[in-house]
Amino acid sequence: MNAVLAERASARHGTDRTTAIVLLGTGVVGGALLKLLNTDAARSLRLMGAANSRRQQTDPGQLAQRGLREQLNQHGAPRDNASLLTALDASHAAVKVIVDATASATLAARHAEWLAHGYHVVTANKALAGGELAGWRALQAALAHGAYYGDSATVGAGLPVLSTLRRLRHCGDHLLTLEGVFSGSLSWLFNQYDGSRPFSELLREARRLGYTEPDPRSDLSGEDVARKLLILARNAGFSLGSDEVQVEGLVPEALRALDAETFLTRLGELDAPLAARHADAASRGCVLRFLARLNQRGLARVGLAEVPLTHPAARLYGTDNQFALTTTRYNTQPLVIQGPGAGPEVTAQALLGDVLALG
Image (cartoon, rainbow, N blue to C red):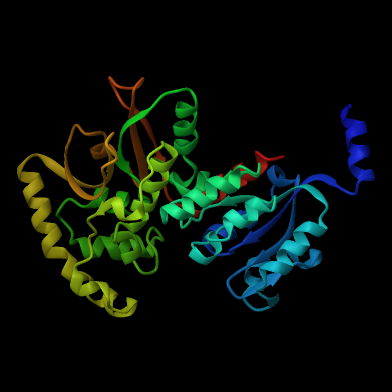
């Protein structure tokens, strides 16, 4: 059947050959995606609904407004996933996609269900694939129904690390070791930290620049890096539980239970321990980097490490992420993937790319 006849047949059966999407989350990343949806690159996409944590919009006229993100802060129907999916179904599009641009564990827990019902899911949310092992297994079972899970934005803000890892495995290669810097915020902090300025001062600057979460403990704890390591390890064939990653965070125990505002007033308590570690590393000709590591026995570790100046992680810039993969075929020298690993624009682009791949 040629393209014209196929299009006519699609029309007779009430389906549209474009791709319809609903967007969950209109924060920093979701807002950046809304801007991309107004570009020529997204002309084949139809936005059927958008929602933040409290309100949603499914009216076509309102969805077409460029100030949609701001409008949702004041106007819109109460949040209701069922009506968003009803709007998606009403599109009669052949390809229906739920885009999750949140960090909500509650929403992530629905991904497998949506996939099993035939919706494609594209996400920056790491809570399912990088959470409990049972959630990962539920995700794999749901994918057997034939729906697509676009997860490029979950690791490396769209750097081609997951796609490369999966392609190598598909070709019969096996991951032996994985090492790298998986956090854009922690990369920036330790690329800048040379002992001349207190770490807390750099942390405040990183927060002002938008490199960290509003509560920097989300970055400093190492838990986000651990989730990314789990996603990579599981895609490489390691059935690791979330409790099997050894995480050495940077937040002293005395600061962990504080409210965010109090924690921000006590950032100076981070300085002395990190200054001591920096001085020890420098005395050995090394620098500090926040590394994630996985060996071929499945031992996974996340935390601060000393690396020599010749180490690839010692030569990073800005918010660069770096992934060094040693495999049975890349065993003399690791395959290194490196580039900006933080920022709403590149993350939103990764989401858009996964959606467009379905068209």
